[in-house]
Length: 254
Ligand SMILES: [Zn+2]
Image 1 (cartoon, rainbow, N blue to C red):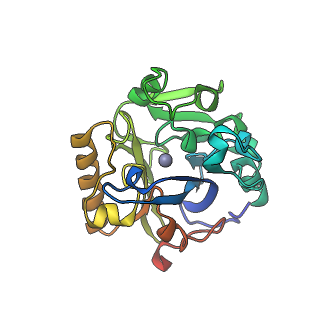
Image 2 (cartoon, protein in one colour; image 1 turned 120 degrees about the vertical axis):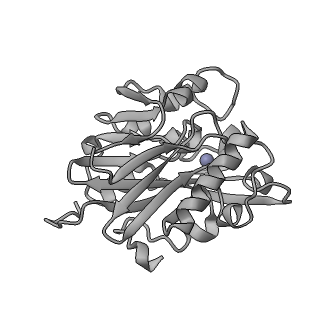
């Protein structure tokens, strides 16, 4: 494990856990063409426990060529359990899975983390079972671990260092996380803000669950960015290319 007696409160690591190719307008409205985007996963190493923010695609996509396999690219070393082992972290040691939301590119690795408690907004959990949105796969997110359903803001470790907060609009119960590290504040946006340009230009995808809520979430992120937080955009291939993989993130270097 990378933590070696360090007194830094929280360490943050990033991993790519698969890719998906979709029309660019799914991410930022009014644009032509398609974009291959990463599924972004973060390990939050806190003295009181290990948490993941999202878990990427399921390993069921490795080698799959039919159906969704045509648009999902899941290299064999990408499943979150393999990513963690490569960093000498036993997947059994993960205490918490924070799901920004339960779409299959965000909750697909949940089943590989048997001792974790899933922490999700209550409205998101309920919506996942309605069948109204084909991007939810119950086999990915309803995998038997305890589920802590929250309503609104939540301080995960009770010390203000990992704060979950609602950023609805992409889905009914989408949430993001503010992480205080030794090198500054990070905001793990998830899909309330897909690209850096989404925030620079305040642009939404063509399809959203609730446009007013989406706009409000972008506003929230914009305020945090103005106050100095480093935003980790949900699916931005250009931004993601400068984020070091599986290494302690130094926010000042980004
Ligand atoms: Zn997504």
